[in-house]
Image (cartoon, rainbow, N blue to C red; front, side, top):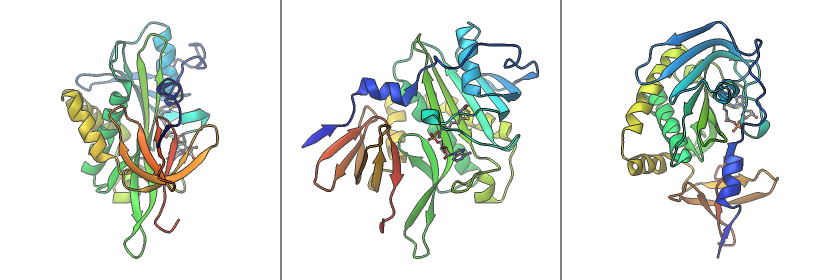
Length: 282
Ligand code: BT5
């Protein structure tokens, strides 16, 4: 028996938030202290401070001033956003906080998200976070091991927030814990003992992303599916409405949905949800 939890259209609205609450561009939130960064193939601006790089990019898009592959990176966000109106925290200058605009038309916005997530995994691995992997849909995590070598808790290293605009463009924001992590999460510094300049990590990620976007779309899909560590695990799926389900994640479908078989052998497909990787004992 198969159940689809929510329709792909509804999932799109949950997965990709809308751009109707980002406010107007004002003198206060349009910073004068903007410095261009020279990274080939991208239009990158470095801001000292902003409310949210996602919101700022959306405001600029609404004002008509954003070309494809524009990137904003900030030292600090005063109102950094997670999904579903949650907050994204990072002390000033410690972590990488950036958003990329992909201008319309876009065939498959999820594939772009997957490419960004794969680029982040590739780079943090190069920086020495060997066990970096993905938790469906786009969290970059590191699996802690329990003392007896079992798969333990997954610690979040980076998260992504995507917004579709009315004209079909997409802004993908990424927060990557380079030198700081809140309790219960992890950072590149914590995992490797080495500090990195966030903008240098950005440059590597954009280079990796450029390479990935040059691949055939199926190749990005294959790499993404091969990198999602959620598959094969016992998981708890938490839906935006508060509904919860425990089961085993069996695959990520071609449309990006996560397939989970519950304890009664019912298959569920999720297009948008929070997933918790359960330890064997949970
Ligand atoms: C995300 O949300 O993971 C999306 C994060 C996107 C942040 C970037 S930064 C650049 C761009 N501009 C923005 O305003 N946002 C994007 P979510 O899965 O909802 O996770 C949010 C939850 O993670 C919070 O409720 C906290 O519990 C936790 N959290 C907050 N800061 C964190 C951090 N630095 N590392 C790990 N977890 C964090």
